[in-house]
Image 1 (cartoon, rainbow, N blue to C red):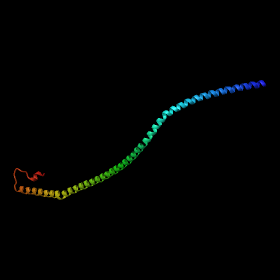
Image 2 (image 1 turned 180 degrees about the vertical axis):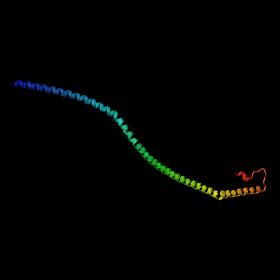
Image 3 (image 1 turned 90 degrees about the vertical axis):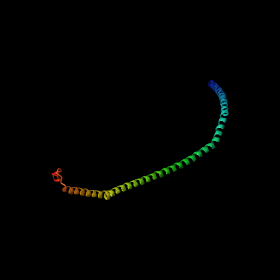
Amino acid sequence: MDTLLKIFIVITGCAVVIQAGILFALYFEFKKSSARIEAMTGEIHKRAIPVLDAAGAILTDSREKLHTITENLTATSTSLRSQVERMDHTISDVIDRTRLQVIRADDMISRALDRVEETTELVQHSVISPVRQIAGIVSGLTVGLQAFFKRGQKQEGMPQDEELFI
């Protein structure tokens, strides 16, 4: 048992030495990696700090300009909205007035046509009818007088009216 214990202690000691070697190797590799990362971080700092400073300066300068642009857009939008509302009211007013004028023109034309029709009927009844009656009376008198004067003068070659009406 003693030998077995000595073998176990030797194996354990070798394992501890191997572990220590692995830990030293890891430590040195970690140290190298850490040095490389620090170098890269320093390089990134050297390059990023001026870029970040420039970006900050641009944002600082642009903040006021962006604020001015935003205010201008707001004012323009408000002005444009009021102009569109005014134009809408104006167009609505023009359309309403145009409708009223069309209605008035239609009424005027209707009244004018009614008056022309009334005047035509009035002329028909008051002027043309009496003229026709007078023309009929004159025509009747003319025919009567012609008949009266023709009876007194009988011509031999002329057929009499009675023969014509057979």
